Image (cartoon, rainbow, N blue to C red; front, side, top):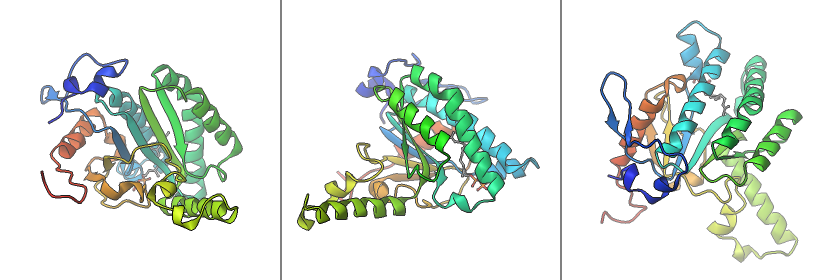
Length: 266
Ligand code: FPP
């Protein structure tokens, strides 16, 4: 078991909580094991959270932003260095127009209101996916936040917007084909590392753990290449209910896993 107080990378974080315990309402404090370096999350269940309260689906997405904030804040204390969040997939354009435009507006508000705070907290923000179909003002805000935070090292948050794992691989293949056509490389130079370098996630380590909330058990086109050896945890909580304690429970489930990467147990 890896505890946050014996982890070098965690101890290098600028703003540790000073405690290795997480408050767990009603159950007394629970020991916080350190998270793995890279956690990715499929934030699912906003619609069901809202329907259960007879609220419009957007109310669930709005509450989902509160969970985003709470989980981003929790990561450095847990020694997590990379957090990747699935905010909008290439398939989500099929939702009703009011929901799509409502989600775009939520991204806009999030970028306007939280950029300064993220920067103050030492968070580097990057976006993965194809930004071109997004409203131009949102694209500008995304570029500006990436630029402002590019030297931050406390936590890297990658937000997947208009992201699809298959589209990412098609895009990478096209870029490699263009290099071959231009005579910059030969087909025999195309190996896993060459392809990896053309992915939106270039420079990020593969996720150690992928959490999907709401009890659904599928990847939905998220990080298909990068998930090759990720551990998967399907958390029962709906995303708006996914707080620090729920996060700690998912991390504890990961902690019990034995990762072998195709080899035999040591
Ligand atoms: C999936 O739940 C959730 C989404 C498609 C949107 C996720 C967006 C947010 C959490 C808010 C904004 C995010 C950022 C990073 C600012 P669902 O709507 O499919 O839920 P359901 O399966 O219950 O219908």
